[in-house]
Image (cartoon, rainbow, N blue to C red):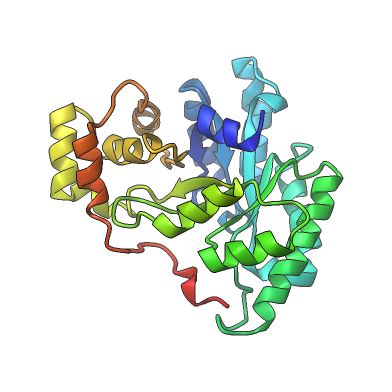
Length: 281
């Protein structure tokens, strides 16, 4: 199955942040597999690739699943941009220890230790992408993509790459609709994937979101996730709570009305709750 088909067609769990320990990762993965999740998102900077890999190797047999039944995404850390990219990617492969990575992303367009306006950033991105292309050709990275890229970063990459990015993962929610970025992805056939769909929790108390949740007898989180999914945007819900993991998967048995969708989209104000890559040259 293609990356686009896999991320849109399967329940996904955004892997726990780096503060989670092995036991919590194990419990979250167990609950996710039980709820039907088959895709998991991690990153070098989360510092839990080892824990995710170990949990999956122990738990897949419990659910009569094999390695090829799950889809693993991880990301290269900003410190490994440029000439350290090969070492960083191979380290992720070793940490996960699952044979290959289904989707590997450049986590950030800049390089750790360089100023956002440092003119070495574009060259480092290009060198990093060439490294990922090499590992993709060797079958170690089944698909490659990027995260936190702007329209300018995307166009720069598309113009120079041999292998087009399969996916772009960015912050996306009603207060940050990313219209231009989605248009660029559509033009070049890149899957657009959302993270931070709840705006770091800020949006679950938005009056409109709460109103729609009450009207539809759903949670505010489900309304926000459904808003993205209903537009064809795959999401990355993150939780260690088994009940919330189940709730976050229940997005396909209700719909928002066209008016509801329009009202939510009207909240767009360009608000970023995570990182702002727009200043990275």
